[in-house]
Each structure stands twice: as structure tokens, then as C-alpha cells.
Image (cartoon, rainbow, N blue to C red):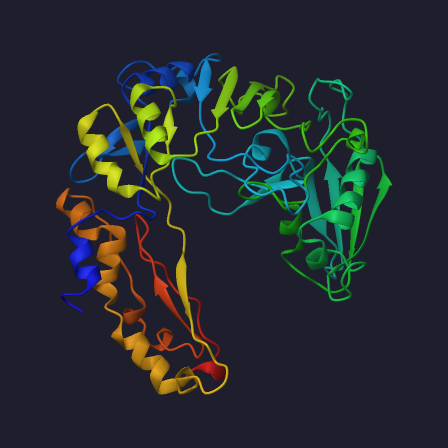
Length: 416
């Protein structure tokens, strides 16, 4: 495939997939860093890497001062704001407002290590037989100070309401609650006192506590709502939670404005006084606003062809490598009727015909980034031949900033 489409493409463009993310540009960087209390030259990072293009994160927390406006963005308007409901797609704003019983601990000067810590709950423990999971609620958690909740302290009634609501409409209700699916692990959830929540399990499941944590956009997670969400306010058009940001304004198809929640239990969780998130659906518009300082950060994982030009055009840009995230594309073979793909030899022939190195280079710009002295080690399924011949699909690996995706092992009974 040396003269294939992919080989030609590799010389024509840079990857439009996950590569690097840029943070801060020109006056935008100054505005963001000023809001964080950093002096000029600190920048929230040091030059790193062979070429000095990629910034090395540094801890500037001691220099941080409260105040200012952080200008982020969102790419679309969700169908509604009730992020517990399974159809609330693309509601990335929910992560600012809502919380869960547990959450994933953010990384420190690096990626998260997938450690679970408390949120609405302060601690949790399993019984010796792992059939009971007990949560202890955090003291003094308050809902946002807006009607009709008005900043009151969260209670076990709110927790019970949230869990029952999720059991009724939650995106993953059938995965969690036995009342919905007899194979699901959670038999019951009940409060034994004002601070203790007891979960009874059908069978031991060591990772069950992670079902009560939050990830990604929060959509589909077991989020904690005040009980007033049952008719007291319109959860499809407003959000009231206990998170670090309080929704102050929402203009449909225009954007969102948040203000810092002064009652959040982690006082130094955020420093800016306000967070603006205009809806900018087009990449070209986002890039233009980033360059002029109208937004303070931009994610270029899907438009990596703009990484190096933007960094070279504006030297004050802080460029950060993204964490590795496994990712695969899937080619599915039709198996109905007299499909030739029923013959494993045909499926293997398709797999072997793929020029993985050229595809990786074309999709993820390995050559161009390496020419800029950015070290992007890759890993392909050809390095693990036993992973290349999955009976019904061929998974094509994808490059991230650090390594190429690794593939899930194939069960012994499916290896050929």
C-alpha cells in the first residue's frame, strides 16, 4: 500500500485525531494566568521536550489569586439539561454544577491515576463478605444558593430522592439496579441514619463503588439532585447542584455563564470568579476566538493539523501533551447469507492487507510531529500478531500523544 490513498494523505495533511491540546494563547494566556494569580513568565508550565514546543506542567498554586473570568467553550446545545436522563446528550456543562457520591481524583501534574475519592460521600467500606457497601455522607455539603433550594444543607432525603430517580429513569439503571434487571448487582439502597447509606448486593462485586462515581460529561452517572428537582424547578432548563460552579445564566444556542460556588466543600477547588462557556460549534470559529483571546483554551485532538501552525504563529501558546487514551476503530464483516467473510481466511486477508504504519502516519501525523522533534512512540496490533485476527472484527489502533492504542486480549476460544 505504499502508493495508496493513505500514503498520499500522509504527505498532505496532519492528523484530525487525538494528538496534542493547546492551552492559552497570547493575550488569552495572560488573561487565564492572571485569573490564576500567576506572574508573567510563569505561564503554568515550562518548556519541555526535545524542541521546547511542549510545555511541562508546573505547580503554581501558591501564586494563585481568586478572581477573574475563565473563558472556556462548548461545542453544542444539549437537548435539555437534565443530565441524569439518558437522552441528555452532550451536556458537558453538567460536570460544573452537579456531583455524585464518589468521583475520580484528578491527576497532579499528570494524568489521573483512576483513583476514586469521596464527593457527596466522605468515605465508604465493604463488609467482609463484600455483599454490603456502606457510605458515610460528608458533613456540611450545601446546594447552590438559588431558588427554590436557597443554599440549604444536603440531607439524606436528597440522596434517597436522587437514587430512586436514577433507578426510574437513569441511563444505566438496568446495569445497576436489580429491580430493573434481575442480573444487576444492587438489591437495595437504604439509609440507616442521617449520615449512613447502605447498599445491599446480589453478589460480591469489588468495583461496584465505581458505579456511584462520576466520569466524563457526567451524563448517565448517578448524580445527586436536591429533592426540589421533583417539581420545584425545571431540571430540563435549569441546574442546581452542589458542584464548584453555579449556573448563573443560560441563553439557548448562545452559551452559559457560571459563577464560583463559595460554599463548595473544597474551598481552593477553583479560583476564577466566573466561567463563561459560549457555544461555538465550528472549529474555525473556535480557533479564531482562541487566537484573539476570546477563549482561553482549545482542544485540538480532532483538528491536530492546527497544532504546530498555531504554536509557531503565536509563541506564547502553551502546548500540552494529552494523556494516553486507548482507542480503536472497528471494521465489521457482514456474515449473512453466502458472505465471503464467513471464511476466516478472507477476514485474515483483509487484516493483513492493512498497511498499519502508513495508516497511523496518515491519521495521526507521526512524521510531521517527529520532524518537529516531538517524540510520539507508537504501538500497532502488528506488534502483537495474536491480536490481529479477531473472528468478526479487525480493530485498527489509533495514535495518542504517547502510545498507540493497545487492544483487548482475545479469549482463547476465539484465537485461531
